Amino acid sequence: MTSTETAGQQSGNSSAEPLQRKEQPDQREQRAPERPEEQAGREVTGRDDAAPQFVLPLVARLERAAPPARTDALETAARAVLVLLSDGRAAGDGEWAEAVRKWQDSRIRKVVRRARGAEWRRAEALPGITVHGGGAEVRVYPPVPLDAWPKDLARLQVSGTELDDPQPPGPPADGVPVLWLNPALEMSAGKEMAQAGHGAQLAWWQLSEEERAAWRATGFTLAVRSAEPAEWEALTRSGLPVVRDAGFTEIAPGSCTVVADHPALRRALLPGG
Image (cartoon, rainbow, N blue to C red; front, side):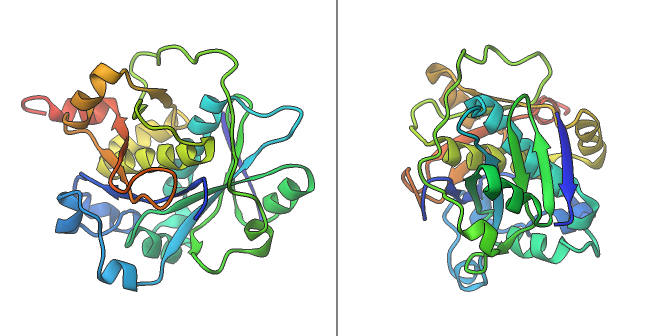
């Protein structure tokens, strides 16, 4: 699992409202300001909707002859979000920092598009970072205004991104952060990739600097799995970060889509944690 870079309202379009996040005073460049509306898990309207809207573009490489497995693509998309958030250009006075701040000051909207062949080569020429999974490749870009996408990304398709797992992915390894998907929701692969990215981002926001560094040192190892139906409600009530989708596409507004289950966050929930 590696990442590389070069100089250079449809399925897969998703926005999340975080239900919980922990204060990180030394990471104000990496997170949106705390707001009571978000703590309550309500839809954020008013000044947020009036402000310029930014979106995080992700492009998945889907070659016809060798499409990636679905779970691999979901995990790679989640890791791509983390790679961008941890990049020095996304914080402080970095070249992407202002765009990242504007994006995180509103809904953390993400749009997943797909590319192959020459489309992928053009997409790779734009500034961003390509993250590799087992067979998946996802390129993440600094946030852009919702109505000002680079032309080579704007022309890429969004809807109809569907992938399958040739074999069930199996249980996650012990100690690995897990992004649990809501088993009751039907979503396209592109939509789920965006949701996994939301979950990874909410976990990142709540981790300490030391916990972030430790996760980054593993290459942001994580797993994405569908939760057991009998366990889903308990997960959403556990105190772990929960993604509530804004409902622009595919699912109803306010749907809980992902629970971010990071071992460090679980430990923090224990008495004395």
